[in-house]
Length: 125
Image 1 (cartoon, one colour):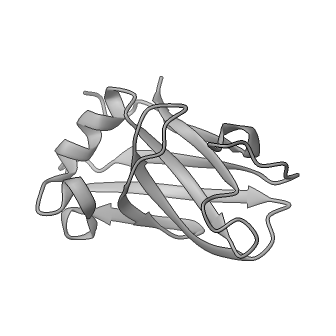
Image 2 (cartoon, helix red, strand yellow):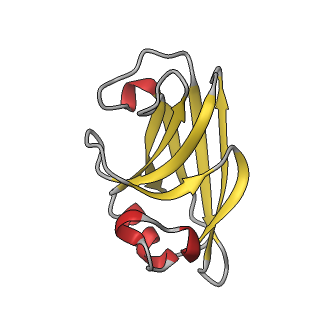
């Protein structure tokens, strides 16, 4: 698994389940640290109002799943101590495994759409 691989999620309202009619779009880019213990990220959105929170959720496209890691807007990192839900007590490698298997998505929640306004599957190029 190469650190240089681009791991990206493109976030739109139509990816929500059910779809949300919104002008907001976003991007989440991820990069595994060289020691494999941190997943660095950069989360950005445009036309997004009333940001509440964002998470990586476990689930395939078209399905809703539980959150497994919190995200914030801008740059940040996820470590094993951040993992929750089905990944609580596990390692970043376990998170990377579900990402590689197409089983993880980013969901951004707003005051207006508390179940999520924009989301996207995390893809590894």
